[in-house]
Image (tube, rainbow, N blue to C red; front, side, top):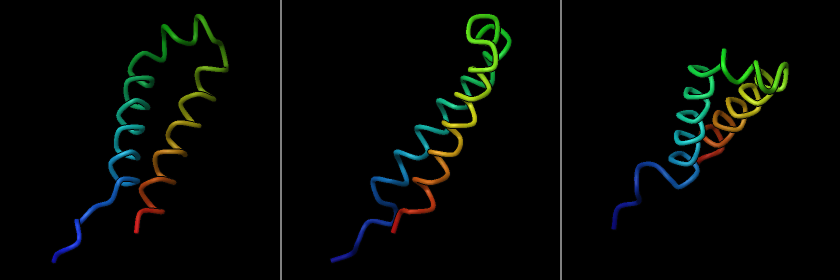
Length: 57
């Protein structure tokens, strides 16, 4: 029986990166409400997404 090519962490990481992309596209509006927190949110989401992708086995 064949194993799946990509695991759950890989797909979760891709979903988190899509959310990070949306945050980046809305950065102007979010920075008005969150200030520097908007950039910190984006950096955290991007880091989490890459972490999930790279830890997928």
